[in-house]
Image (cartoon, rainbow, N blue to C red):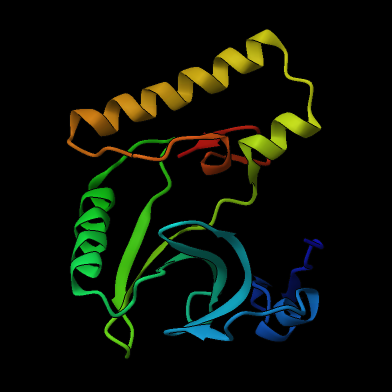
Length: 173
């Protein structure tokens, strides 16, 4: 997306306003999920949809994962259990879960840290990685997965489209 500016005030630098976010991303689907303003859809798969969103109270961007099966109690329970386990993970290469919230239609959604960057697939298409870079990324992903497996968390869909690379080249699963 287009880079968004940060405003300076007497109190210092402040986060983006909601109108600034909306102006920079005209295609919003939906407008809100809970208290979060949806900026844009970033991914969609068999299980659900991930959105970039904005928390107006904390003035920060977050990622929101919404299940495709909102009315299904069993799926909601599985998603809740996954989020509870994921929230306990503390690793520098694992995206942090911030909270799980309920929607009015008996659905739940997971709120996670927003990683500003691109997928590993996009990164590999744009950059010619050296052997050293490839090994470093692979090692960091492997260490994150090893840690997750040791505490009982299994990713189940590890692939280049589900690994994020931030602006410094650090991978996240």
